[in-house]
Structure formats: C-alpha cells, structure tokens
Length: 198
Image (cartoon, rainbow, N blue to C red; front, side, top):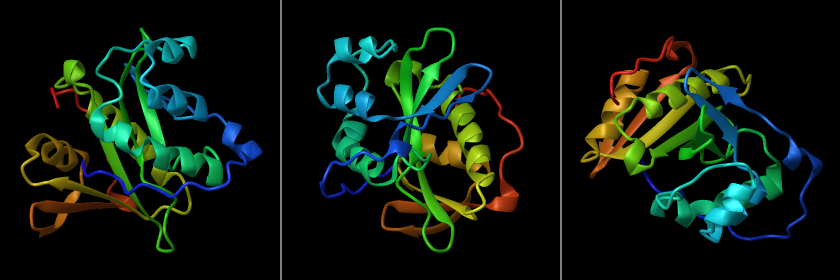
C-alpha cells in the first residue's frame, strides 16, 4: 500500500479520549488501535519496550514503510484521540505477537471517505491474516455513521495487495501511472472472510 503523508508536529496535549480503548477479535486475531506507548516503543525499535507493553515481537516489525509514518499516527492521536481512524495492531490471538498493522490515514473527509492501508510482516504472509483483519476493520468502519466509502491505493506491481482488495470487494476505479485507486461503498462491504492464503 502507498506510504502515508507525514503530519506536522504540534503541541503535544493529549486529550482524555486518547486513552479510549477499542478492540476487534476474529477467529485468529486481535486488532486494536495504536496508542502513544506502542508508537513510541516502535519508533525506538526497542523490542524490550514493546514486550513490556504485553506484546511479542520479532525484528520484522515495524516494517520500514510503517516506521516512516509513525510520527503521522502519533500526531493523529494527539489531535483527535484514539478514534479508530489511525493505525491498528494486528496480533495473533493465541500468542499476542504483532504480525502487522492495518488502519486508516485519518478521519473521514466531508463526504465520508476514508483511506485504508495494511501490511503483514514477511514471516506471517500468505496465511490469510490480511484478509481476515481487513474484513473485520471494514465491518467496523461501516458501522460508523460518518463513513460512506473506503478508498485504497496500491502500486499496480503489487499483485498481492491488488488480489486482497479484489477479494474484499473493492472496485478498481482509476489507474494513474503505476498507482491503482480502489474503493468500496457502504452497501458493498464484505460479508465473510475466506482463509485462502492471501
């Protein structure tokens, strides 16, 4: 998925809603929003700090693309609290190991559009985790009254992401250069998750 534009740093006053907790569960996964503690530990690439927060992790996480945009997700929490429109951890339910992340680039716009992105660490790919977590988060998003459309972008050479988006029910809308734009309207949300190795 494409990299997210970094937000500018601002005054770090953390509202009470930044401590709000949310959690989604699937057959094999727990999906929960980033908080400032996990962002700060990941920014330092410190496995000990991450594990002190109750997670297991290996040296594959955070992946380079995610690491680059951690300041953006930190700023989202500072400005808006933990409201579900930032990044979420993907955890194996049985082990609490961080196997990837998924989420949105920010709050919905005036038309109810949000953009989704996702990534699974290399050692956990092709096990259906991305499809499973995306299905759950999309269902959560369309339960929010202010969401009408979820958008996504990926490089046309990224055939795995394209396949996952198509399986989820996204429609390919446009292609600009190497970048494919996808979208899913509220009434086209996925009804079930398939574990077919995506």
